[in-house]
Amino acid sequence: MKEAGETIRTNKVYLRLRIVYCCAILLAIGSGLSSRTFGEYLPGFAAAHLGDALWAAMVYFGFRLLCTRRSQVTALVLSFLFSFGIEFSQLYQAAWINEWRATLPGGLILGRGFLWIDLIRYTAGICGAYVLDRCCLNRKPA
Image 1 (spheres, rainbow, N blue to C red):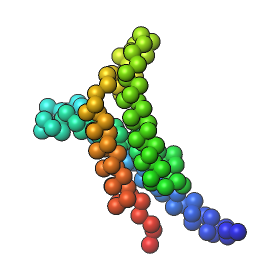
Image 2: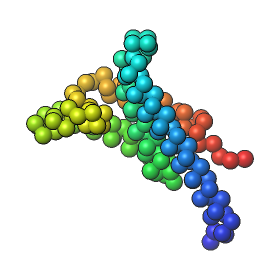
Image 3: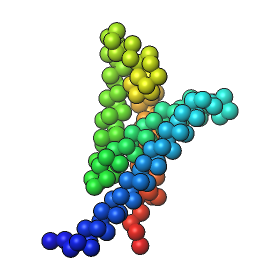
Image 4: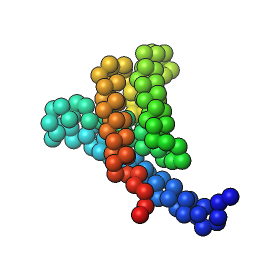
């Protein structure tokens, strides 16, 4: 059985991780929206691909926030399933969902049209977030 002090330390570690992942989500959102808003100031390649990659990174960090006690691989798999699921859902073109996609929140969450290149962008964003998580964000306290 765990001692009270050990449980408190464990809870503090998970709270710290949640704060880190929340900050990473906010940074990904801000950077992604900025890449769309100020795309003319970025190199063409970055302007074309960065927003979708950052969206997928945000999805990864969201799953890490929600599943902090699970492995990073779990978040990796869930991120791919979610992101690819959203992209493939764009093949469904009913009037009601297209009306929602035409709104700002609907467009940001569901996208507007299926593109194969988005799957590559999502892969880059999720893998980049995973590597960042493994190398920097999920450090064990000394």
